Length: 58
Image (tube, rainbow, N blue to C red; front, side, top):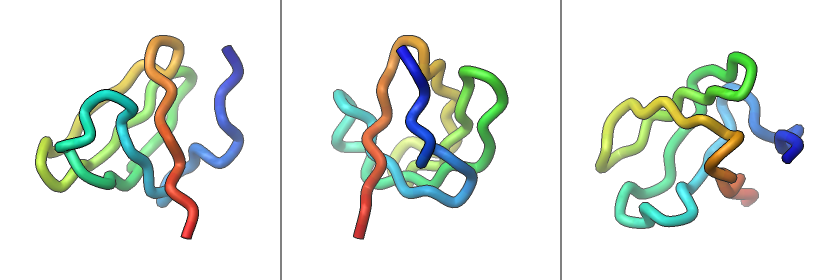
């Protein structure tokens, strides 16, 4: 699974199964791990090899 090239710090994303977390903002991406700050879940480290975050485009 290749990483979305739009998954960069500052990008807005949704978790595909935790929709109640809201739209989060990517804080950092190091290798396959993205740290995302979600309004209703706080800061979460996500392994993008197992979870495909959905980039929110305005």
